[in-house]
Length: 260
Image 1 (cartoon, rainbow, N blue to C red):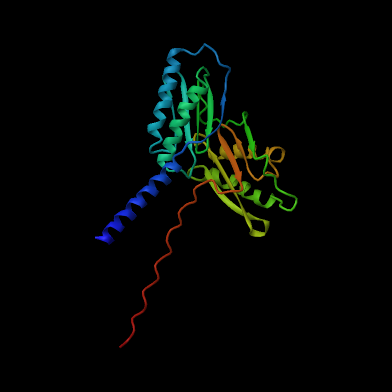
Image 2 (image 1 turned 90 degrees about the vertical axis):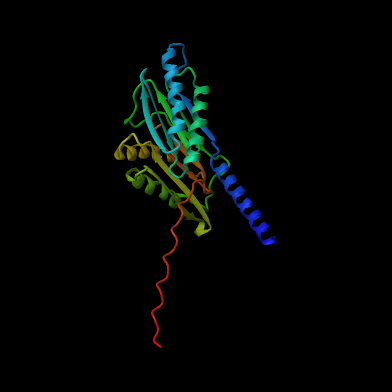
């Protein structure tokens, strides 16, 4: 009986830990937003209703998809994109929060985009599907985390350029990787992603446009992001994405039979 009670306690603890991990993974963290046109009273009630309906529908779509775009009758175009490493539940939580947030922050704007840590969401009264957008870019960096003269980051930044070259041609238009610096004593982490309404070549051009900004905004910083409506880049001195689970090693071959 004592062993059975111990087993029950262990299983209860395991379930609690799993629920806690899932809860942490599902937290939605706001990053930035842009209300793309001046607010006004010109938005029709039909447009507002369709916009709100489209944003609300994204929550259910995100339960089983990390990217979705759609349009409704009154000329509302919208999409969401979840980061390539997040779970379905985290994607849905992020898209739900972002949809509610952008509706409040940009209620009288015909177009807007919002970035969360694990997703982005965008809507407009003009079609933008298939058109890479980099004109409106956001630069964010850690002002208290500059590299030192003894810690050049040129080698570590190589991961960004490698990701930019390869990620656009992957299924999710997403890539993440790490590199070691300071003689292998520290690590740096990079991530790039594009919205999947644009082509692979346009994704690459979108990301290359963002890399053009690195020398003037972010070079020498340990942590930074460059955000655009169609693509984004992130670089940090800590692991901020989920690493893929490695498959177990193959089983050892059976020993050959021995003679009597």
